[in-house]
Image (cartoon, rainbow, N blue to C red; front, side, top):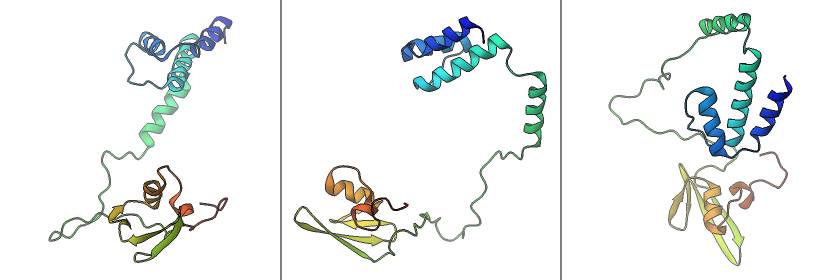
Length: 161
């Protein structure tokens, strides 16, 4: 890598995001929607090196074309399977084997009161509301994010989650 190219790439980290976006537009010839500084630096560094040193070899370009032609690409998502035509489609939530079965009542003492949470088919019932996850219940109780499984004693600290 030429020394002036190395200096130019090193200087990218000292630029503000707005300056990196302007440099991106000048180097690539089009604006970028990204505001991610790390991504902009990586893309600019790659492009500056490719412009200075020639980019991919002709052999690498041919191999890339071969790989694309051999790939089994889908143009649309696979169907979910046949749905009964006389009933509405059901939304299936993934079952987490680490959680208790629906109908289970979880209790925990917290700041002088007993919390009671019912495990539902699709969520968790607490204080007259249904929450999507145990972590959402724990956040409603404590006011900050924490692991719901840990908060309600379903796992211990350091255990594989």
